[in-house]
Image (cartoon, rainbow, N blue to C red; front, top):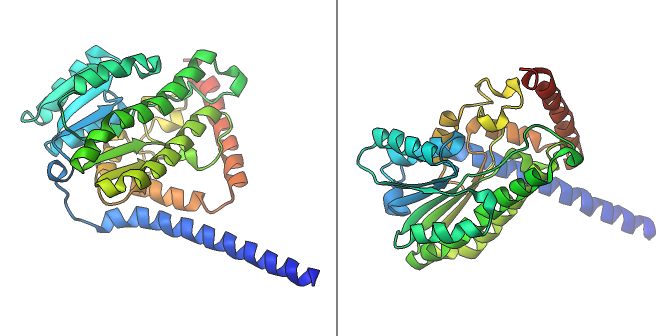
Length: 315
């Protein structure tokens, strides 16, 4: 009798693991393939609204995504901590599309709660159709937890968790009132497993996935799109700790290539890597169990750490 119960429970566990893995893999395939075969053009102004807010908009993905929105005739509110970069980015985007309006807000998200009153007042009386929560902070290079300064840890937690959470809270109520809008939370593939040597960074990105999945359930009935993007490596300044990641390739695209692909998924899939080649990588990387993925991440970051001390620090 005990043997039968043991076999029965073992069978149920094996079936659950198989179904769970299959569901996850099928979901990844859908998220990768569907945007490639769905050529439907979405009018963002009509579907979401005329104005978009982009945080961390003067470099990397944020700047490239803002450019794609400008091409689609969306008015922009750019938020970043460097005023001169904001003004420069504004001029560049107006050259892309002189027919849109662009406002800039200087704000350092690492300062936490005090900056949101300023942002709130600047956004008053503007109906926001799209919020792109892009601002983020990475480790300077792969480090053991005790090596990361307290200030850097607080900045990573405050920026990566606080900014997206509070910007969403600031804007989502008006989207609810107008029964339309889109919130794009740009996370990272580091969320897929614990990531040694970038422990806190990866944990904040796992928060973003959980946050996105939960508010999607809360607000989808109000016509609000909540999209979660989890890119893998992109050739940006954030990954400047390794020369391997500063050369654009098929699997390490530049920010422009990534943004062109990512924006094409908005309104089509709720969760995605945002870039088809990253989708393929994600598909295969999710096959092994979490402990293997964490081990691979550990070995990978040890190489990047070595890159930093061998090439970057000695420049």
